[in-house]
Image: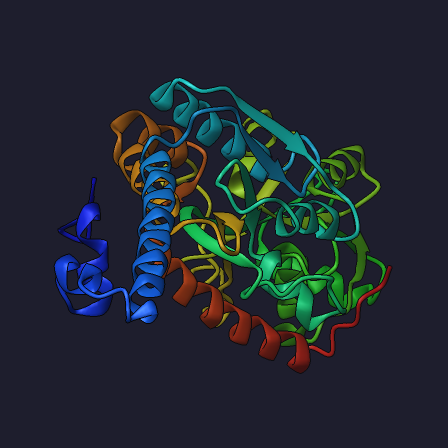
Length: 355
């Protein structure tokens, strides 16, 4: 076996700078024997490490567990299952998807933070991953305790209302909210989630007052919006697209600079009269900190290939999502940037966590 281009059986020479014959020469030098023993021990250690490295190149050799900290029916659920299925098909190993909601995503996220760093437990999370620590203490550090793998998709926020609400556009909605301060209720996936921050940003920019109702995921919030218990909500398009097409929800405006092909009739906020309103989120994969770099890069590389495939691009864009390809380092930079950006928004909006 070759270690860094040198034969393992040359380890004594590598370690001491002397040929083996010089080390064996005189018994009077007991130190030489000790050096030989130490060198051989080091060579054995290198052999073990090299074997471990070889094992990593064969990754994966067993089932991979994907944990999302949201309940079924939310925006992350289909993205998690799609990614898990594609990787399973590529590598021929089972993929187990587990929803672990609760405590504003902390339960599922913490489970991955504490998992073995071997590449067999993967977190699929969203923007709240870097928001929560600005709202309350978390048992993990969102940066230090995870190895970013890859982003999956960028998601815009779309403002939707219950069809019974007598508004046809953003101007009418803002007028109604001003006429009934604190009486219109909007739901979110939880305090600090992107759709909550979108609602607070709308209030700050326009001077309206609305009642925020946090839920444990987008699914339950959407159900209550359709039933009329909520009047409006911000959501990522993938969550509400079917309900918009079935007319159970009415779209008002969407973030971003241009309209999306999946909903060409929906104006962006700039067209609707609020150009300064823009907020978006992302979905990405994480491993526990300490996961071997080659494993992280192998998953990341496969995710990049998957997200460039025409069928995946079509699948995502048809739901109003944008495939977002990144390297582990690019994802790490995004995390730090968004963490600072949302911390400022939370401070400026005076957002407080409401358990």
